[in-house]
Amino acid sequence: MTRTAVLICPGRGTYNKAELGYLARHHGDKQALIGGFDAQRMAAGQESVTELDTAGRYSVSKYSRGDVASPLIYASAIADVQSLAGDIDVVAVTGNSMGWYIALAAAGALSPDAGFEVVNTMGQLMQEQLIGGQLVYPCQGDDWQLDLRRKAELLRMARDINALPNHDLSLSIDLGGMIVLAGNDNGLVAFEQAVPVMQDRFPMRLANHAAFHTALQAPVAAAGRAKLPVDLFQNPMRPMVDGRGHIWWPDANTGQDLWAYTLNTQVVETYDFTRSVQSAAREFAPDLFIVTGPGTTLGGAVAQSLVQINWQGLGGKADFKARQAEDPLVISMADPVQRALVAEQGVAS
Image (cartoon, rainbow, N blue to C red; front, side, top):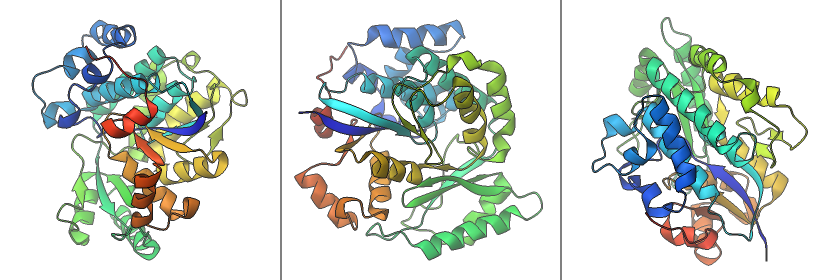
């Protein structure tokens, strides 16, 4: 029996110490795929994906870099896509932030090698310029009920800070029950000083993250367009939901449009991951939401986005956990138990 699924690709921050060796553990049978990525890296004088994945030691300073994290996350996610069981019918693809690049390849708008070229190029450009930074702050209660008033207050605070001289701050990503703000150091510090500490860790700065999805990234977007040709892009073979909640249908768009959105709009404008998940749910009503690896953190944001629209009667955290225990809805492929529900058995190297 076929199971329909919306496939969700992760962004930065999902290849951490626990993920070191992810490719070796799960994808030893995909040497041709990963070998192609390695060849691109070595031709550019960069350490190969295989070398990075099989290193004996993980360090935040190295593995959080855009030119290291991005290719590792892409390789892990695309290999996971190719590992889905035969009864999984992917009816749409979306992703969070950098996950949009992965979604393009998962949907066939980029070949696997072209997708790697886009990710590796943009990761390197982001790291070289490293304009601004990001922080995360919650706007929901413990039961995953979105506090709309508090969220509006926080966004108004960000706008007020952004209006100050030499301060840049704006919404980068709407991420379920969290907001990700991005800006220059003055803007980020002003926000950090204005809000209370929550859960002993928020507001949380994200290491080696630039001011993604804001106007500050215009130079990076321009450099990306100069380096990455339009002919890398083609019509997708599967529907895609972008960072505005807009659906790109197969045969309804041109590669030129995707190139322009990918290397301009989504780089410099807010990425609404919450809306992308909700749009995918409403339009495609899948049996499953499958989050590729590496990492399992994105599953929470997916669940929170669904709770916000009371998807299939999910009114809060308790409802979701009960549903997951009885009949899992959100599957994280980086979780070994959940992976077994949707993946063919991989072969470790």
